[in-house]
Each structure stands twice: as C-alpha cells, then as structure tokens.
Amino acid sequence: MSFEKLGLIKPLLDAISELGYEEPTTIQTRAIPLVLAKSDIFATAQTGTGKTAAFALPILQRLRKPSREEGVRAVILSPTRELSVQIHADIEAYAKHMDVKSYALLSGKDIEKQRTHLKKGVDILIATPGRLLEHVENGLSLKNVEVMVLDEADRMLDMGFTKDVRKIHPLLPKRHQTLLFSATFSDKVRKLSKLILTKPAFIETAKKNTTVETINQVAYLVDTDRKAELLAYLIGSRNFPQVLVFTRTKASADELVVELKKDGLKAGVIHGDKTKANRLKTLNQFKEGEFRVLVATDIASRGLDIEELPYVINYELPSIPEDYVHRVGRTGRAGRDGEAITLLDIYEKYDVRGIEKFIGEKIPQETVEGFEPDPTIRRKDVDELKLKAEHKNPHAKKERSYNKNTSKVPPTRKQQKAATKKRKTTKRD
Ligand code: AMP
Image (cartoon, rainbow, N blue to C red; front, side, top):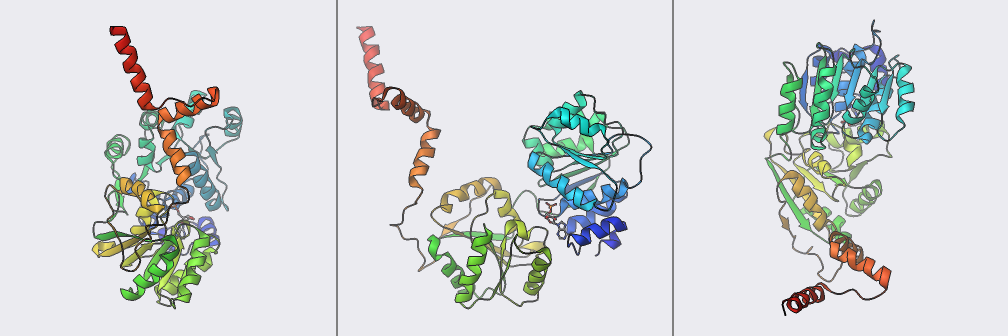
C-alpha cells in the first residue's frame, strides 16, 4: 500500500516523503480512507503506531478548502501538555506545504497571550480538555468545528477529564466528525464513545489492553555486566534465527552491538541518532536476513513495521511500562507463538513491578545455569533507596525535622508508645 493509493493530496504526499515515510502503517492504511469519507471512528492504537498521522493527514486534507465561516475548524484533545506539543509539531510538519494554521493551547502558559494568538485565526487547535474549556469560558467559540479528535482517550479519562469532555461535546455543531483513539478498550472509553460517536467505524490494531496471549514471557535474573554474554549465549544455544533486542538508551544499543560482534554475532542498530533513511535501510537488511540481531531503542523502533518475529529480548527495561507492551507486541503476531525474554539485573528486579502492574500479570523470574546473579553484589544506590523509603514513612519525616530543629535524638516509635502508655496509666492512677 502506498500513501498515494490512500487518496492523499500532493502537498501532504510531499511533506511525508520529506519526512522519510515510505509506506503507511496499519492504522494509517485503515483510518485515512475512513476519515476522508467523514466517518466517525473508534480506533485502538497505541503511541508508536503512527496514529497521529492517521488522523492529522486526512484532517489537513479536509481543511485544505477555506471555510466560509470563521473560527476553529478542528479540535484535538490530548491528555497531556507533552502530547499536545508532539501532535502540534507533527501537524506543522505535515502541513508544511499548506496554508492551514495549527496552535497548541498549553496549560501553564499565559492565557491572555493565547487569546491574542487565537484572534489572529487558527484552524486546528490542540489542547487538554481543561485548558480548552478555560478558553471557552473566555469567549472561544467551537460552533464551527468540523472535526474533533480524542487522542489517548483512555489516558485522558483516567486523568479525570471525563466531565470536561462531556462539557465540550454539546458545544460543537450537530454535524461534526469525531475520531477517538485509545490504547485500550476500557469501560470508561466505551461508555464515552456511546455518547460522542455516531455510527463509528471500529479499527482495532492492537490487542485488548496489554500483551498478546500467545506470547510466552519470562525474565532471567543476571548481573549487569554479564547481560551481553547471556544474550549471546541465549541466541547461540537456543538457535534463535532472528531476534529483536531492545535497550533503554542509544549508548547501550551501540555498546551492545560491539559486544555481540566480539561473540561473533552480526547485529544492526536503529536508534534516534540514525537518520530515518538509515533506520529503514537497517530494518530492510534485517528483514532480508543480512544479520541475526537487530538492536533498537524504543523511540527509534516506533512507526517501523517490524513484524512476525518469534523472539523479542528486553536487554534493559523500558523507562515507561507502555513501551514494554509495544516491544513485546512485536512478537506473536497474527496468533503465532512468540517469546519475550527480559534480562533483569539487581536494579531492574524491582522496577519490573511497575510493568507487571500495568500489564496485570506477573512475569516469571528464572535464572540460566551458569549465569546466576552473584549474591554478594549489592545495589550501589541502596542509600538512596533507604531515603526514598523513609520519605514514604511519615514518622521518618517527623524524625528528620525533629532532628533539624532540636538537634536531639528523636524518640523511637517504641519509646513513643511506652510514653503514651505511661501517660495513660498515670492519669488512671
Ligand atoms: P505516533 O504513533 O503518531 O506517535 O508516531 C510514531 C512515530 O512514527 C513518529 O516519530 C512518526 O513520525 C513516525 N511515523 C508515523 N508514520 C510513519 C510512517 N508511515 N513511516 C515511518 N514513520 C512514521
């Protein structure tokens, strides 16, 4: 499938080709024609699937003809400031050869300055529901809005924006198009969708909520400095034909490639310092079997169509739990069995709990013979952890301020209890 076949106009085709996009992603292939046909949509798609372009490109195409009415023509609701900034940047890039004005209403910025900007004329507004309503209260009209997008709707509702979205909806004209994008089919999203969508087309590009059922997940405990060795051992001893390995940073991706080479394994790398063209070339070489291992960082792998891989290895845990789902979702596609292996060092052993909470299941922790963690190795940040734990304990906080103010040694909890007991018994006597 090509972008041309999706019916996009030349200014958009030129912009995306300048960005190095060669082919539409799954969500783009499915959503763009529907949005162009003015259908409401309910799409489950996660960040990294190319969902921004899936709604932004057809919206820009729709807005290419000037409207007879004045005012905002498209509203994109996002849960966070950061996402608003990102969506705005993407839209600016896609609209490079068009005369469509977009603007992000960022919370925390001067509302008066934003009002002045709005008066100059804006076609597409990107905002969190709260900030948009503040402007509505200050006179912003939404009566000429043709399209509304709810991006990351599940996150937005979890963050408490349900009421605001419900307030915004009746401010739009009766005939408008609504596009809802959500990573999950949560009950809250489903409920809201019934209220704001009219005969929507459903697009499901990711499995419900989290990891794919056919994937076997396992975590191997290993010392930090033996991870590369264990990885090479796993690939060799289990005869993995092709494997995608994720690191958290660009530096560790580069270092790992060097280490793997020492073990005789040819590896390609894609990360943020590589150009888009270079990343695509490496990906194609990997697909064609020129090397067995592809090392990638989370951001670089987004939007890249890496499919049908039986094995994914998390060499390091991602910084955010959602990325674990994106990574693991690269395997076990279309009902195939896949295996996701995570290497956990002494630090990550605890961090993995955040991921387990997110995916709602435990990842079994095992060891590989010959690579068992050295029990004498202690965490280097143990003092920092102690301090953090103290912060969670209000009594510990009191003790610290007591120390600061009086420079006396505070009573322990046991001493405090004994003193209370003594006071009570003295009263009774
Ligand atoms: P998103 O899911 O919208 O956050 O997009 C993730 C990343 O994929 C962004 O960096 C986009 O620039 C990139 N991207 C979106 N569509 C494509 C495409 N068709 N080809 C290559 N990269 C893309």
